Amino acid sequence: MNEQTTARLGPIVCVTVTVPDIDAVENCYIEHLDHRASGHGRITEELADLWEAPAVANSRYLLLSPAAGDDCILRFIESPVDTGYVPFSTYGWNAAEIMVQNVDEMAVRLADSPFEIIGEPQNLSFTDDIRAMQILGPGKELLYLTEFKKQIPGLDTPVARCAVDSVFIVILGGPEMSDLQAYYGQHFGVPPAPVMDSRVKGMSAAFGNSPDHKYPIAALPLLGKNLIEVDEMPQQASPRPAAVGSLPSGIAIVSFASSAGGGRPIDLNEAPYRNAQSVSCAKGPAGELIETIQRA
Image (cartoon, rainbow, N blue to C red; front, top):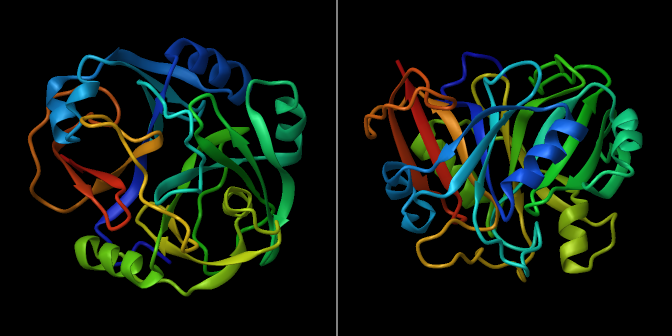
């Protein structure tokens, strides 16, 4: 992939997670994942209305950025979390993948942290040049920490700028691979990607399959050397529930820069809306919330 792609989507600029306790999140990410607080406040009625989630209006939020900068941030919104939610058991945004410089060192650092290690560092099933681990955060957000030992031909990805850099892949699960690929192609010009079979340990754990079970996945290329990994989920999977007027548990929204027009004017001078002309929100084929931000 290169910048000549016809995609009108990318890069990823924000991943939004619902959590029961903002203060616990802030301490956790600053101490153990080298992030810094880059914003606090309360969700405006304008944003809550955009997301069709009026119940989160006036909820506290926290913005966290890696040491390298706030071009891609994590946004946490204080909201009740479904105690029965298990990542990769339902359709939608199931995980976010963060680029790190040394994943084995991260495993040592996180061993006695509030993060739960649910997958120790392991080379990917299709290449030994990518090594990743999986952790679960305080809002039941599933994070992959991924190290590239070298750049992979045909997979255009960024280079980690610090020990723990920003999200460069978001992982979306749905019932039909063809529907997922077609939606992002038709609505955002994202080119289709070849489908391969790969281990997805979180999904295997959620459905009681062998850790070595493989699922159809594809890596959809975005602008800015970012990707959406789309996973075809087992038939037992179902839509992710959310209380009326609220956001779903776990990763609730992914925000992308976009060259597509339309949307609402917005006047918020902080990431991810700084210098934005307008913002839109759509619900994708797996029920995922897709926020697109058109920059000036």
